[in-house]
Length: 512
Image (cartoon, rainbow, N blue to C red; front, side):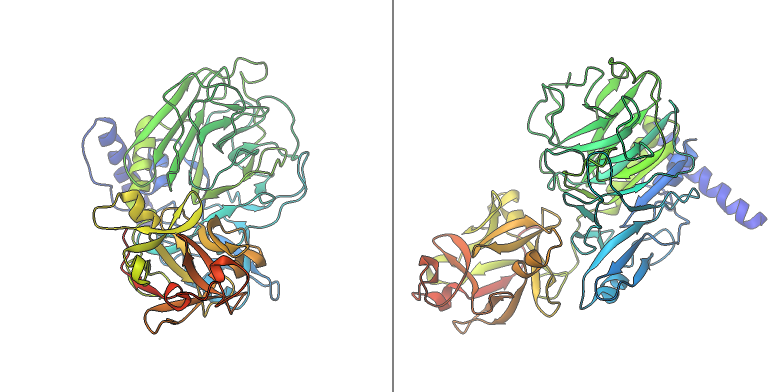
């Protein structure tokens, strides 16, 4: 007992030293073993909820992260960690879900409060939700392949009976790691404090981070997405609702975003965001509560919601990798230490494998037709096209032409191609043309995004047959990309140069 107490005390002191050093502006490497909830606890604002599909948020945590349920027999399995304080055991999910599909049915709270999230029931503005597909958002974190949570409209998670979460004007903080590449302008992609009855019970009864492109109070600047505060009956960028910060134009299509909200429950709230892959946090608002009635003091009820509004408004889309809620308002130094830890784990880092069709390998796909041997498949405005990419090309062009090979979404013996810089978006065909789109978990999407490799039809390279149209192959035609047959009524089915056009060189990735 004394040994465990001494170990816990030393861990807390280590985390506190990190926070104090950052507060004093002392450059310091991230202290080993200090994860977000360790850092917040050391600063006196312990986590009362800690949710992640990707990793532990306490250095000592070695329990389950989430639960999946497979379609074939309804069986469930808890997905845990590779080691205490480490990363998700995604291979356990892959093994359990082989030959079928799985949804996420529960997200475990890593704190001692056990505020676990389950699939949300019906509310005042939405029917009962469904679980998110478990394999929709593969991502590399800390050098490990894990999965995030990809929310489509009609999906959401909730806990209406919590312990320790702020109520009735108490102070709290919260953050989530999300993505600027999977957003919309529908209500409401939230994480945080909500009503306990799935209804809108009035101003100030919510206190949740919102992330999306919905501008509730005009003006908003730029195109978003913005980190906003859903305080019920409004997404607030300031005490007036609308943005008072013309430089806050949103994060843009940043693949990984740290979104942060803290609120003393009485007369002050603050909003911050940062690039979860590099750098620090930017404060976009710090000031009084909304001036409309009901927000000062706040009237939080203490439920936790993820992916919807407090009344289950569930038209939004979004991505979630990790998030916590604290008791009390964290210091800026603690927020900075947590951001440094998030950056240190390397969200979206290299997979460690390149140039092959092995799942997890990063590749680029080069055309082999004589006209186009410097052209690669890339996405541009959501469309799949071919265009030249060279060592002198921009980082954007190189990233757009890089794909991560994944096990086929419809057949694990085939492959699917995930965008390198749009996590959870896959190359799929619709009306025979290829696009980059987010995985929604449907059987149609799975089939459309699955391709089966075979020897190149020209005798060189590799050709890719459409899983659900096996006589059609991935082909470039007039700079666009299609699944095409060898002859047919469509122009892109022309037999001229078909064998060359459907043969691709699997190359080293352009993105580093």
